[in-house]
Length: 460
Image (cartoon, rainbow, N blue to C red; front, side, top):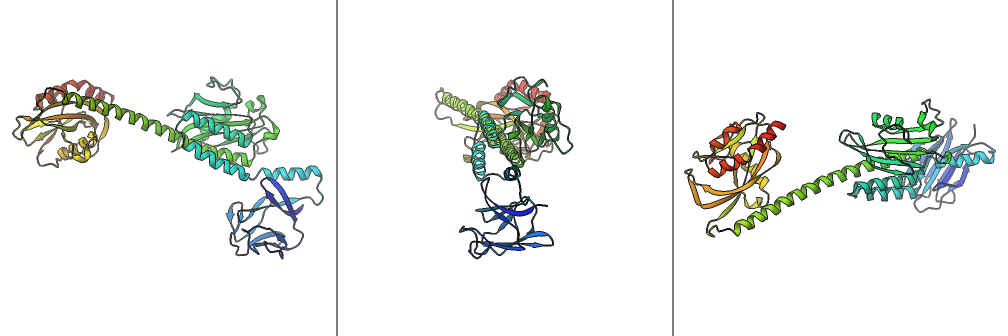
């Protein structure tokens, strides 16, 4: 068994070693300590380390900035080889073991082994900067390019790729971005990376890490041997329990073999890449929705301009209304009565706070005239203009309405009108609706959209 030591690290470099030859050592800023650390964040007497029953125990002496072992704050802990100790955020020590008189090659291996377990401060700052950057991106191609560029640079991978998947979790190779490898037409296995490891990662929905000299008993894949790969990491990119992509890297040089730090950085990038990809998908959906709505606004503005320029007498007011064709699970259409004297589709005028939002007005009117709350919007059926109907059910030429009609479905079948002016609501077979509607313009419009409604009934 070798001698226990504390090695002080700066980044990945060992700058001081403290052989633990005595049974007790004090650590702190004061020069009276056995181990002195000149840092304003280290307390005068910060901690001590002592031997008990053959083990070394680390104890915090009520320091201002605490003691951490492997990232967790401790008051007292029995140390194990390769435990990482921090006195505040500035002093990092490694509890290690080395031979009493180690040869030069052994000492070099010890330093390299230290490097395998800790992320350099500069790399952590780079991680923070890059993740902020990719999460704010809206272009999927830019996200993939940045993730692969930064990841391969950080972990020293020789090659790699990142690709998106479709809604069924199948990899879309046309979206792939690669580094130092060709991935054209990778749907077949005659490729230049380990397909078996890729499949294992997708099936397990977790990271897979393999080495050509694996001591864990895991079989080395044929592709790793044939491609002369020393180490491989692959993981699906998961968001909300769904696969949104895949990330793969490998190393062909022994000096680039992946370490625990490599795996940490790989998993960190994978998690944030999945979030960034999901955000970009959502942005595209919202952008498409915004463009669709803007197109509808432009159409309405054009229609309003046409109406304003028509020969309609200026004294005839124009009111904006909205309503809907509502289909129940049986494919029947909702029809409502106004004042018990006329029948129409559920609709009504836009309130002042609903200006420019006809869908909101349509949902409100449907609820007031039928009691239905659960509505799923399928699309807009169009709009038309007609004269109003009076309370007696007769045409009122002193008022004109511009009506926008939406198509909804609902799981509800029970009808309970809330508005006293609309005392009755019915579910009516599609082919009988036009004949029941009172206003000729309502009949003409419903007839013109009948094919759209039936198409929806068939698809449902």
